Length: 136
Image (cartoon, rainbow, N blue to C red; front, top):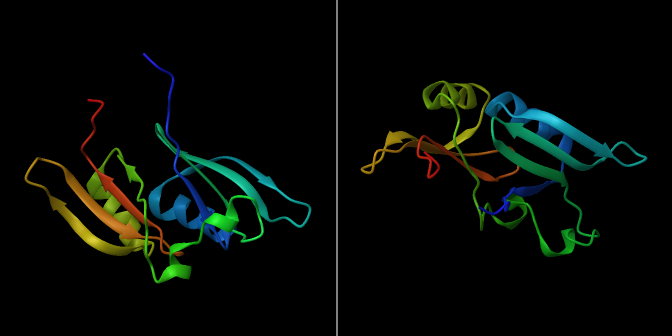
């Protein structure tokens, strides 16, 4: 068994607002936040159960930032979309809706048994939430 893991990493123009949105709408818990001298988020780690994400302030002048853009900067296009498995998909969906997540695909049952929905966050990143787990 290997120790490889994958952690989605996202950039946000307003990382503080993103942390608040991801915590309130999706239920992520803040694990750590590192800031620069001006208070800007350089690196943040959030978790929901065993799901883990990292994010930071997106800046075109940083080493990685010169290769990336937020979806809102490129007409809402996403090239990757995290898939997260919440404990209660129905409750999670209602909470995300109530907090203002833009529903792209409403909660539904797939032919293969997965219950899932897809939504967009405040800066255009698309998120998938569902019940299917390849680990169970």
